Length: 396
Image 1 (cartoon, rainbow, N blue to C red):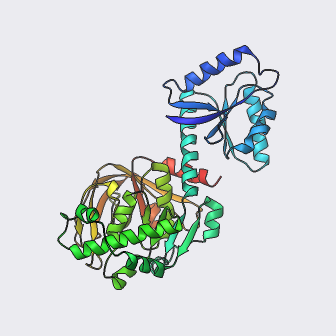
Image 2: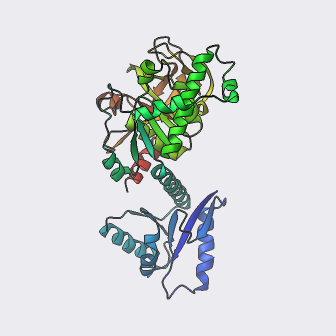
Image 3: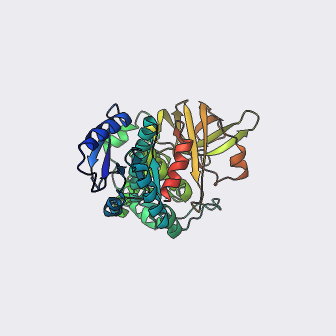
């Protein structure tokens, strides 16, 4: 059940009219016949919906609007000059560079718009309250993935900070023991106990870094671990993403921001992967990576890391369902999103360990002609329009 703050806007002349209560009950009952919303009167902690019931309500709007977030949702009955008042209010907002939307018409449409608005407000609050870290720098091959942190803060309202790589390495050395229950969780998955122990030290170190820096997510220059520690962070990432701490690979900051958006909107971390093969005739592609959130998959094995043969790569079984994949570009000016269906989980020895073959409903030409780097983020479901609309909402 969604909670929505309902701010009543009525003229002083009409405020005491007995008929308004009955009209309100009938109107809100038509919008929400199943009682999915819990309307609270003027609760500033909730997403605010301005219920414009009469003409002359404009002055009441002036008393309340600064207590709530833009864009402003104006719910209109169409009676008692409420539509005229809403047009005046919307003009007032536009004059001040603020966004608003009039919701008027079919009850089902109004219900869906309120539900989406409440979801977007909550997701934006989560997104903007999530501090992200970059441990080290983007990998050398990510030449299109440098991000201006100040510009990202201005455009999307998100904070990003650099974390020194040596601090992370020191934190690994500070981990002297791995809890027995953690080792036991994976004991039947591998005979390589030393690799398991070291991988879990990396996990614990990254978790401590997040705690110290108050990070809800990070991206790590993970390939440096191959030379420095002869281990990988793939298992650590699978665990952290399962726990809701966003862990992105290779220092890819736009991918990290995209993962953060997906978690805010869908409540879980998606699968970050890069393309390995495009088939333009069938409009399908293979995407793969050596880690995947345990919460995203149905089963897994602990293979070795593809490029190095060291440590672990996660070979996860991903559900064969409809999916969406998306990515924000490096200057946060646009988001690319495509929908498709996961047809199978191939097992190809020359690719990263978690692999999916996706039949896309959208043309792959968009990726080939105007890519946003190489990584994309996958979630289950048909959400292309929702992601694009939420991205626009974030910038308001």
